[in-house]
Image (cartoon, rainbow, N blue to C red; front, side, top):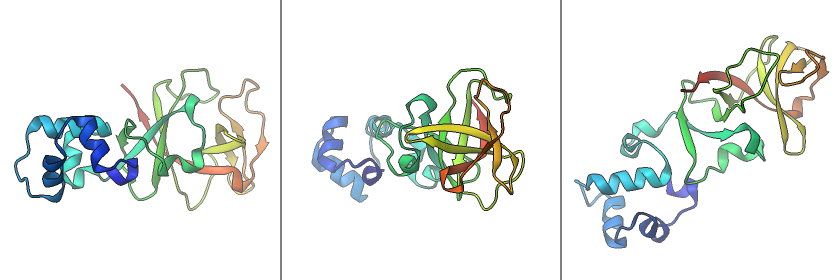
Length: 182
């Protein structure tokens, strides 16, 4: 997690107010019974559940970005911040990141608190949702009506279901999973 967040031991030590020697022993495995407050502080710093610090639990999480603040979706999965919100997904192999939808009206019935998990895809079919780059740093969710010809419509467009042709290189990823937030 430190490497992904670009945080060195000294920065982490200062952020969680823990002596560097103690942190070093903890990270090297010399400390076999760390204090709960230390584990809690580390988990809070990385914005992950405490259980994820113990191994297998951390697999299967992807970063969640707010739809309105998504700036570079092509780098979203590789540039998580230490204060990043993470969510567990069911398809861990293909999933790259997730988008928390902004509350607004859509032509598709997606709840305003939905989180769309975006990932790699082998194919796109009619009915699939995809994240598409419209302009530089402008993204939209498109529902495909013809997967073969890559024709679909913007689910957030005010002009209902106006067909648009999608360039394959503009597709960031396919919506693999829809998670309803709380």
